[in-house]
Length: 90
Image (cartoon, rainbow, N blue to C red; front, side, top):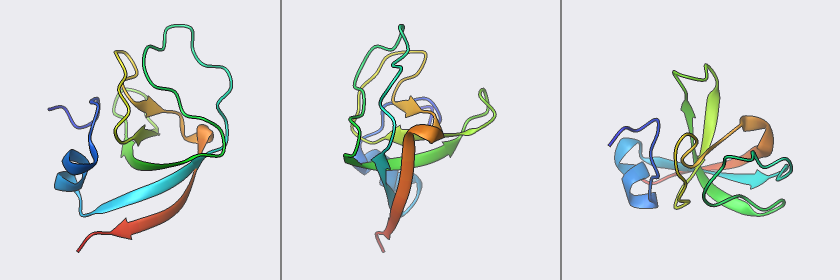
């Protein structure tokens, strides 16, 4: 599994790090025309993992449990989310 570009489940994400971030979607507008898969809804809270993208050069927000196809998979631009809380699982 390529951690940066993959559809991670909650269980898979917590194998990489013992915490989960929770973020509220603040912008669900302007869905890219070529995005195939789940799309976040404004004001909903999601479990996420924030990962530095080597290809984009910025941190992307991966919504855990979302399914999407290339090129985005389940990664979203950081302006779409507000990270509210980090829960450590230890």
